[in-house]
Every structure is written in structure tokens, then in C-alpha cells.
Image (cartoon, rainbow, N blue to C red; front, side):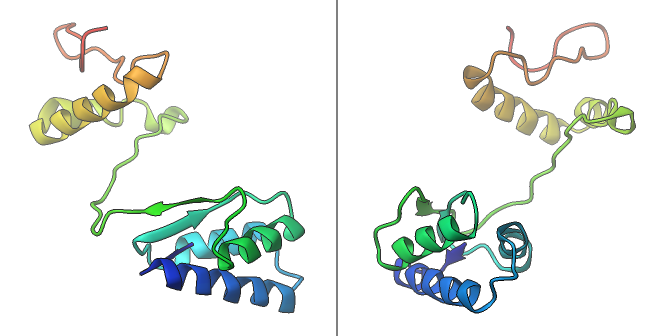
Length: 141
């Protein structure tokens, strides 16, 4: 969930807890999906993964009281930019970003920057595909 201030985030948590108590038929999955897809992402944010409705209410009540239990809280960027995801899941995505990488220098630089930021935390190369002519893309291994 998100709000424009820390106080508004606590207020929203309290309202959501009251709504869930009034509508016990709602599933935590449906509520989470709706929060993620139908609301604007404001700057002050909180997230938690409840095991079920009772855990969700406990976390929301704690957040509303200003003492979140097992909830990640933080402030997001004031403005965000679009993100392109090329997940590589399935044959229909094979090579999807390769041509764009080869033909769009701005995209290639951005992808290289992402790889440089991610690879220190991974045990694999983010850009393992070879460029035309056989050279490797991204940072050297």
C-alpha cells in the first residue's frame, strides 16, 4: 500500500483493516492484487506478506498504530520512469531484446547499467547472449 505521507499510510492501514473485517469474504490475494493494480503508487509505502487473513489484520493494525510487525516501510521516488521487462520465459520471448540491444544505443547502455548493478548480487551473467561478431555484451565476466 502507499500514501502521500506517513500519517496517511497509517490511516489507510486502519481503513483497510476495518474494510477487511467488514468483508471477511475477501481474500488477501485479491486485496493485494487490487492494491497493486488499481491505486496510484504514492511516495510512502508499506508491504508485508501475510500467511492469511488474521495475519493481514494483525499487520494492518500494527501499521495503523505506527509499530508495523514484519512490514517493510519506506519512501519511493517522487517520480518514476517506465521499465521494460524481457523475462525470457518461453519460446515466444527468445531473442526479444537482442535486436533492440544491437540497434538502440540508449537501450543498450541502460541494459548494461542494470547488469552492472545486479550482477554483484547474482551467480550468473545478466547479459549472457553474444553480440554480432561473437563479442560478449555487458561487463566482462
